[in-house]
Image (cartoon, rainbow, N blue to C red; front, side, top):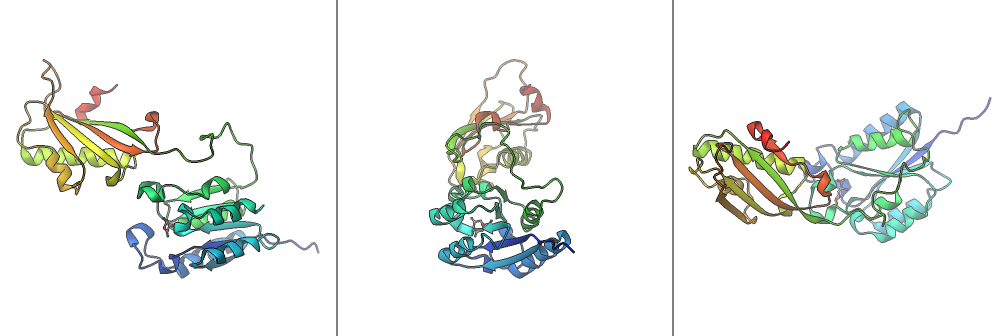
Length: 286
Ligand code: DQA
């Protein structure tokens, strides 16, 4: 009978991932590393592939494992932890291997602090999964196992690379517009509507509090029960410069309207910015 060689994958977890389960659960979830590995092994078993899981807090140990992977494995899944953001030695090791590599992060590194938004290994790996919790590892196993619709077989790139340098774009200062209308001149109503608008503007654009450079509010003259900036302060935006003013009183303009111009640092291009117009304010932007 013909011997069928089973696909064998290597799963590498980098520094501090041994602390999963109790470490910053809001980012990394409640599963321990062992529980994640068990789920990964189960998924691999379902797909008929073998997987070896290692965790180490040492950069050199990870590199040694990558060096010895060729010939023994058909693919690597790696969560490099913080090494993703600065380890050029790890990047060089991954760039050198012929094996397909998938980088996984439990949290969405692009929605967190600036220093986490850059992965120095991303340009040399096959693909990256970020922000899907432990599901990210399962998807990576499926892709490397060549499951239907998730194949890692080399494909021609569909077009020129998004970033000619191969590096992600720098963060730039961009303007994000928002507006909401038909608000009653009542302190609680104004604060509630402003908070909802700001929340949606940052969520839609994956902007972290630390990335907001300034916010300018303008209210129609019929809204004077409270400064809308108070809503931002209540959201904990204590370091953001805020400015409130009255909108130009053009006859026939939408009443009860709160307009916002947020200046934020983001890697998005202007055409990727989501401006947010809630309720009747939707008519302000066609
Ligand atoms: C992480 C993200 C890194 O920024 C962090 O240093 C980690 C975990 C993640 O899985 O989301 O250790 O890689």
